[in-house]
Figure 1 (cartoon, rainbow, N blue to C red):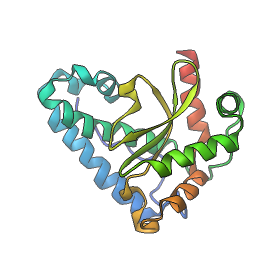
Figure 2 (figure 1 turned 45 degrees about the horizontal axis):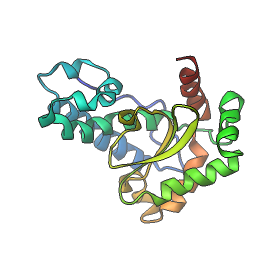
Figure 3 (figure 1 turned 180 degrees about the vertical axis):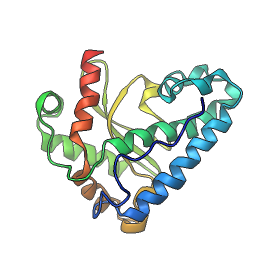
Figure 4 (figure 1 turned 120 degrees about the horizontal axis):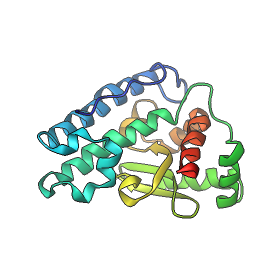
Length: 203
């Protein structure tokens, strides 16, 4: 079954003023849709199109070589954005509590240190890409990926991500990525991140 564009769990203007409605509309309805369309085209006629995108990206090296780069680019765009929309939300922000909060403290010392390191990862990603909080073999880690590469392909489990492609922020922030990243913290949906973390713990 072909990949589909997921419906946002909130309205395009729900993340105002941190992320403007027009950016959300174009980012979701145009950019994400294009990744969906091109991933479907790349895998047309193969068994891979019937599998979840998470499985496809986790087993990317098994995808036929002549299709692999297109799947890496566009399949990664499908998966990364599907995660990105859900880890944001209206009336969000703040700090994580419970097991996730404790795990972040254990890995990074305290939330402020984690926030500083994650922000630096987002700001230092050269060109287009992402910053991630992932679950590795033993504990939480902060990592970066270029373009639409996914941590899933590296055997990591994404918990939180920020898109630092310019299309994610340029309408409101132009070249001021630091302002975008600072505002983004106000819309982080820690409840969703905690649910993703809980699945890792019980897997």
